[in-house]
Every structure is written in C-alpha cells, then in structure tokens.
Image: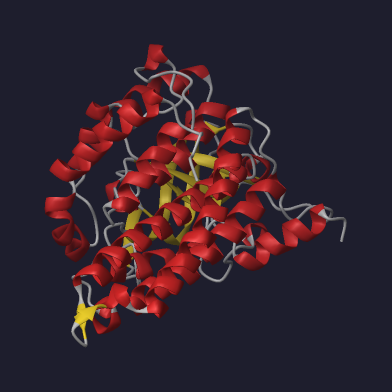
Amino acid sequence: MKRTVYTQDHEDFRAVVRDFIAREVTPYYEQWEADNRVPRELFRKLGELGVMGFGIPEEYGGPGETSYKYQTVIAEEAARAAVSFGHYTVTTGIVLPYLLRIADEEQRKRWLPGIASGDLALCIAMTEPGTGSDLAGIRTAAKLSEDGTHYVLNGAKTFITGALNSELCIVVARTSSPSPEDRRSGLTLLVVPTDSEGFAYGRKLHKIGLRASDTSELSFTDVKVPVENVLGEVGKGFSYLGQNLARERLSIGVAAVATATAAIGFAKAYVQERQVFGKPVAAFQNTKFVLAECAAEVEAAQAMVDKGIELDDTHELTGADAAKIKLFCTEVAARVIDKCLQLHGGYGYMLEYPIARLYADTRVSRIYGGTSEVMKTIIAKDLGL
C-alpha cells in the first residue's frame, strides 16, 4: 500500500540519514556491539547533523517545533540497516521532552544548547533493584540540606540505558514519605550530572540484544544536587513521568514495524540467493506463503502506526491509542521476525546475518515502555472493563 504519512521534505531528510548511517555507523557497528556501547563522539556527529534537539527552540540552538515524523524516519532507516545509535532515542525521544515541558527558563538556558549540539546526552534513572515497574516503591532518597541549598542523594538504580554515554541523568528520588492515600506522592525529579562526586557506575549489564547500547547499575552516595537542578515541582515527579508515555509507546511501535519491514527485506534477499535442492529457497511455495503472510501483517501494523503518527502530530494521540499500537505492533514484529529467521535456516542463528541481530533486539520491545500485559490492562480500562 502507498504510504501518505510523509512529504518530500521527509524523504529528502531520509536520504541524508541513510547516507549518514552508511558513512558513520555501518562500517563500525560490529565493533560497537563488541564494545557494548557506541562512541560518545557519535552524539556530537548527530548534533552536527541537527537531529539531537528536536523540539528545542531556535534561541537555544535547536530546530524549533518539529514534527515527530523526522524521528520516525530515523528509526526506519536505522532498522533498514540493522543498526542503532546507542541510547539516542532515550535522549531525544524520552528524556528531552521532560526538559521541554517542565524545565524553567534558567534550566533551559543551561542545558538545551548543549543537548542540541550533542555535547550533553541524557539518561533517566527510574528502576530500582526489587521494584521493577512499581515506581511507588522507589527507595532512593534525596534529603534537603539544612541551609536549603542542595539535596543529598542516596540510593541505587538498575537497568539504566545510556548512563555511560550521558552527562546528565534525571533521577527519580523520594524527597518525602508517601501519604497513606497515595503511595506515588513524594517523588521528585532531580537532574544529576554524571560526574558528580558520589555518582558511581556499578555493573555493566550484558543483554540478549541491543548490544550497542550500554545498560548499567548506578549508585548514589551522598551526592549533592543543587536545588536549581530540581525539575518541576518537588513531590510531583510521578505525575510528570506519565506525560510522555504515549509518545514513548508510539515510538516503540514505530521501531517494531520498521524492524519487521527490514526483516522481510533481509529474508527476501536471502531466499532468492540461497540454493536448496538445486533451486532458490524462494521457489518453494512455503517460502512464498510465509513471506506473503508476513507482508500482510506488517502492512496492517504500518497502517496503525501511521495513524498514530498523524494523531501525535495533531496532539490527539491518547494513552489507549498508544497502548494498542505498542501491543499490536510489537507482537506482529515478534511473529514476523521469527518467521524470517526460520527462512534463513541455520544461518539465521548466526550473528553475521542481520536477521539474528533483529531477532535479539526486538525481544525487549514487548517489555520496556510497559509490558504487553500492561498494555492489555490499559486497553481493557479504555473499554470500560
């Protein structure tokens, strides 16, 4: 089906991104995976490309209000090449929107120019050992100093994406005890420089997929955080965390469909080249039927994603809409990529083939940003159940 979500400007941008990936990413990606992180310099190169500061006003060095479609183009091109930019999407798509929404003027002047240039990369620290998705159970604490000039931060976080390549980390900490009526009260967002005294990296966690994106444990021992680094109002942290969930879940759906589309492309190329019993694998009816099924499923998921992108542009994307997109598209991607790997036979299990990387990378899409089970709960509530 013909897609109508993009204009010529988006397609021109796509060509620029595709060229960037071919020059600056693909030749080095195998080493980045071995290193379990991309080089920090990549973010500065992305800043030079003008894609680190989507939404940052021009007076702070950004492009101003920009359609989310430019970010979806980047996701599609990265999937097409079976690569990633490390925790780029965390910085631009998840953490930056918090600053754009709730940072005060002094904070915007202090941080936004560096983010736009790629000199400041961002991560966010929510999850703690033993708490998982239960943010109300956060025990990392920040106590206000007696003179009221700073908070003293103590605690630990885990599963933190991109911390090794970040200069600023938004830490979700408890600044007061929860009330009996609301366990989620008393949480505050603190912007903590990663070079702060007492800010320490723990274990570097090794994942099944997304191997070019670092994931770490963090600990905070008497870290002094100036009150000027409180993001938004003290005690309102939990309410802020929900403000970007719809976009975040849409972005996971976008990446899932892009990855499934790429998988079909890799499988199609492989079965046309691979000879079995004297003829191409593509000549067998089963191969044709499997890829036909995959193509039909991905078309349906793509239509759903494109509708979500349009709704996001008009600020009409609801939480339930995003949950449906994430649930459907990540489940489709799982099925499609598995079938495409199967068509590769034993070679599909070898990391030298892109399909193996896509298979491993896509598994987490049904977990992060809210599990498939959480998405079903949101959708059921929207149905009045």
